[in-house]
Image 1 (tube, rainbow, N blue to C red):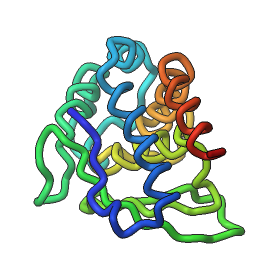
Image 2: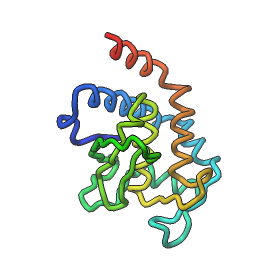
Image 3: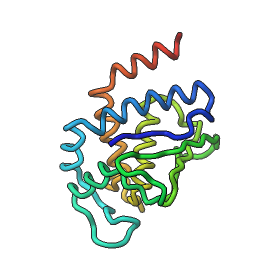
Length: 171
């Protein structure tokens, strides 16, 4: 399973490089045994796909994530196929957004900072593309739990990526 971004050539070099660092970390995190452990012990709500059908248990949510079975008909299984579009809304609190039937993630440049933040937002939006919603349960909805797990595991396992990013940024 891996994350890919399809339209990097359309982005400015600085933006492309930040996303490449974010993808490097995401593709490491998703394969960690600790990611599975964190998913299995997390308190999760809103685990129905597109808000309908039977609720999934933690193992089923983890398996759905690992399948990368986005709801878009052109999706390739075992990859999160994401196109990134950057926009700017200075007064918005929205970090990014997508739709369950889309492969595009729109990211607000206002929040387009560190590779960890970008990775966390890409993963959050990817869970929407899998059909997971968050209607009011900020602490236990799958997309927000993914934010916390991504950031925790990034801090524990991606320091080298942060250092490489800083070296690139200041070179």
